[in-house]
Amino acid sequence: MRFACRGAILLSLGLLVCFSVGCGSSPYATPEATFETAKKAMTDKDYKTFCGCLTPECRDDQAAGLVLAGSLAPLTAQLEGTEEAKADAAKATAVIEKHGLTQESTAKILRDLATNPEDRKKGLQKLVEPIKDRDAFIAEFFSVTVDTAGSSEEKVIVDDAKLTDLKTDGDTTTATCVETREGSETKKAIAFKKIDGQWKISDL
Image (cartoon, rainbow, N blue to C red; front, top):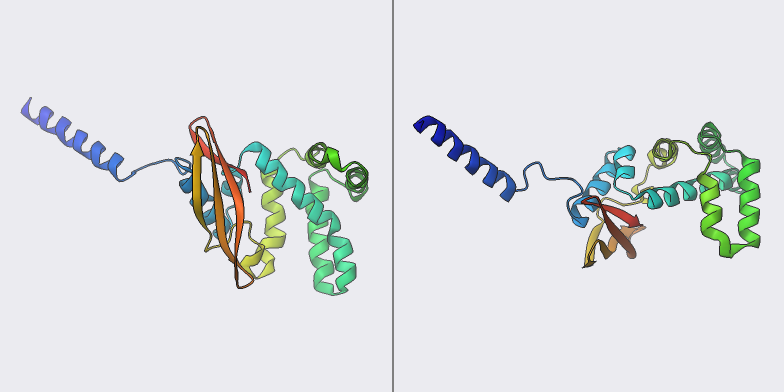
């Protein structure tokens, strides 16, 4: 009995210490934790984990942005006129086509967006509709763009990024992301949303 009680006490003390130092805490327990998880994922090129830090809506916005970038890549390559740019454009195009998109279909949606800018959100959603696995699409697109860029400037969140001015109201938090890009300090708004007890980036 004495040993059983001693064991229970030691277990309780261990749990108390564990909780007090955050042992085993969720990577999404707070907005700060989610931000650090996302930043580390970008550094580690762990893009599936990065996607896991985003709300579904924010992830789709990221995917739509990449579709836009990939669709414009051939034109950019033509303007640059280098073999490297053409090779990069070909890689981006290959990822887009692998995930069910074509230059023709995206071009039509882009034309519709140009003539009906008020339907931007609906148009962007159309861009990602054919993509069945959006996490995989983002990961593959980053692997042929961010990974080959040779510069941290291409990262969504750079290594020295930090959060300031956090303001939480219930299940939402707004903050400022401070980074160094091209040698200068930049600031951009970032937002978080609490979903099922986990904080996810809702606007980036």
